[in-house]
Image (cartoon, rainbow, N blue to C red; front, side):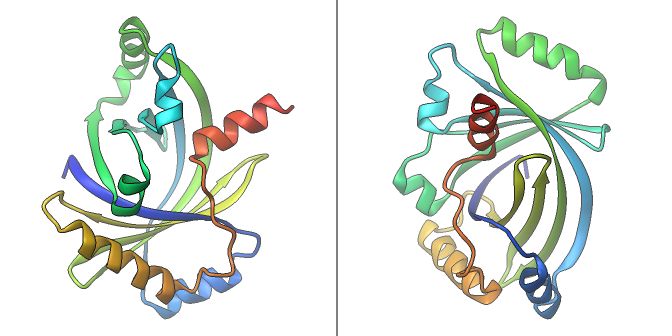
Length: 191
């Protein structure tokens, strides 16, 4: 599924213990332990940043390359998910992909590596994922997401996300309201 709807909530994590207990209790399976190298791009005026457009390359475990585009965000799209397009590329094309994006007028905004452990389970016919992320020098985070093809009713997905968050008992975690790219960029700027 290269075009899909992704609905997620993200949080800062101080203590993973409760979260890991809930992951095990709810029967999620560990599906990946990876290192992701993300490079985000923006237009020259940085409207991508303001509108929360995502144009990103991701190299996973130095072997899988993906180009991702997520359309502009608004309160409505954040609440009901937004379309995401992922194109798989050959890892040998990494430098050419970067060259092409820059030649088309995009600029590198920020790059970073993160360690990600992904747990997954199909619940009520929908893919539910939990990603535990750690970015060196930045912190630990958790993303809880539901992925579906873009024909699923958005209200149904929103209701499912609310159930998922309740089942995982994340109410004690502080919500992460910025994308990783902005958190990392702000941290770099303050150093």
